[in-house]
Length: 361
Ligand SMILES: [Zn+2]
Image 1 (cartoon, helix red, strand yellow):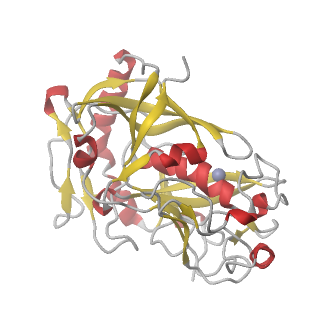
Image 2 (cartoon, helix red, strand yellow):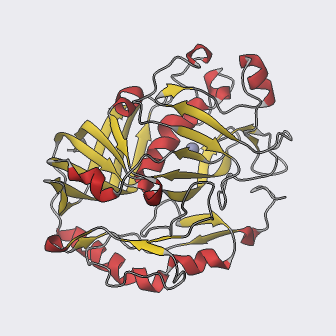
């Protein structure tokens, strides 16, 4: 049995790689750490752009695949619960040249234009969208108004359970405290509720809240299981465990294929959202134009904005399980005195139609 609160300092491995992006195509299509694993890549040779190869290691996740963390990463690096194998999987020396070249190319890249277009979020950006616009507003103590410090409260009400349309039918969100390698993975929460997997949004409809024993009783639904403290001297609060955007189907290329004109956004750079978790604006470190179903020019300073349920209503496709990636966040803030929770999120690339972009201009 282990919980993230009680792990020794070495229990969570974090690795930092210089923030930046990449332009060169990886030459290797095999994974040195997992010779037998399947490796995928999406390339656009005419623009010298390629994704890093993704090493798919079956059996490490409750989902059908676990993928190698991408570079660069935000939020203090790549974090997972595990051993030295996680460090080896990062392939830092292999990835560094690509990241450096990409960082240099960004200095010369044109700015993201303003307008409305189809947007594809990388898994790393999609998980930030999940964290801020689904995770926090579904914390039941915020919904009841008993926790309002640190950008608290929520646009949701208890009566929304089972009826509120949170997003399109492609939207499926699961809270899973059993995800292998997740930072929100434990045997029991801090109220002694066994770890479990539960649906929060199913086919776009709100089906659950993150709850404590007390708030679940007040709601008359659920059994708690999300109460966590960041140490022995702090009160447990309702926190995210591992909150995932469930995969749909198909590859990243298939997600791009029927986009005539759009924007691919990768690697979170900034986020801003109001206390009720409705109006938001996100920025990413890098973006690419999508033209006729393929990635085109690199763009810098890309931003997009939306209103939570209206934005999720525009979700028209999520890529499949082979594109699904798990990320850890170590700095989820809540409460007064403030507590930092360790949570993980998984997502595949996700496509949203008619999104307002370039809002920082
Ligand atoms: Zn947070």
